[in-house]
Length: 358
Image (cartoon, rainbow, N blue to C red; front, side):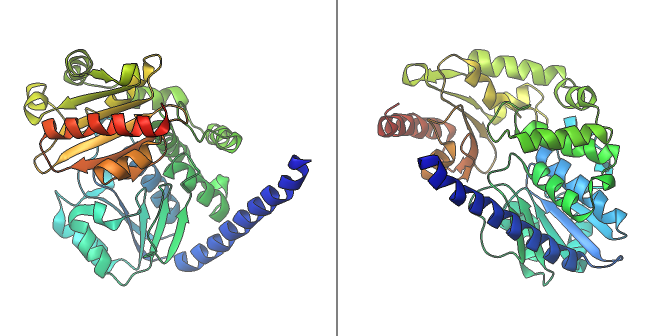
C-alpha cells in the first residue's frame, strides 16, 4: 500500500527533473547559437581526470559546431593525463597568464566545469567574475551558488564527465561522440568513481558506458594509460606513505596519512603523484574513513574518503576543514601546521563518530 502511495510522487519528481533538464537544454542551445563564437572552458586548480576529460570532450563538441574554443586550467595537470586527445592545446594560466587573460576577456560565452565556486580558479577568478559573458555551469558538486546564467548541476551523478555525456547526448546526439571524445569522457567517469568502486553507479551510467564502447572506446587502453603509467618514484612514494605514514584510529574505523614538502621532494614528487593515495586505507576490513594531509607552501591540502553510508565526508569536510564535496569523497584546507591539522582530525574523528554512533 505504501509503495502504491509513494510511486506517483517518485514518478512526478522524475518527470519534473526531466522537463527541467530539457528546458535547460533548449536554453543552452540558444546561448551556443550559430557558429563562430569565442568560447572559454575553465576548470579547477589541480585538475583531475574528470575536470580534464569533461572539458576536452565538451570543447571538441563545440568546435564541431564551428566555434572557437579555448580550454583553460589554473595550473598544470598530472602527467598521467598527457595521453588525452586535445590536452596539448590546453592553456595553463600559471604558465601562460597573458594568453589566459586574453581568452577570458574576449570570450562571448564561458563554461565552468567540475567546480561550482569560481574562487577555485586562482588568478582566473577575478577576470571571470568581471566578465560580462554568460557563465554556464556543468558540474556534479553539492550546493552550487546562484551566480551562473545557466546551471547543469547534478550532485546525484557520479562525475562531471557523465553530466557532460548527458548534455552531449541531448544537444548533438551520441553520433557526435568520436573515439577520442569517448576516451576522454570515460577517463573522467573512471577516475571519479575510483574505477567504478564508489557510489552513484546506476544502470543509466552503465548504459552510457556501453554507448561509449559503441563509439570506439577501448577500456583497457584508457585504464592502462591512467593507472599503469606511473614513475618509479611515485610507486616508491606510495610505499613510503602506506608503510611509514599511515596511522589507524577509532578501533580500525578511521585512518590518516600525511606528507610534508620535504618528504615529497625526497621522493622527486611530481604534480599528481599523490592522487588516489587516500583510497588505499579503505581496503582494510572495517575501515569507514580515510584522510591524507599534503603540505603545500600556503596551506595543508586535506583529502577525505569514506566507504558505505555511515560516514558522510562532505559534512565532515565542511564542519572541520572548510571544504566539501560528496558523501564518499570530499576535501578541504587547513591553515595551521601539519601536526596541528592531524590533531584537529583526530579530535574530529572522535567527535563525529560518537555523534553518529559509529
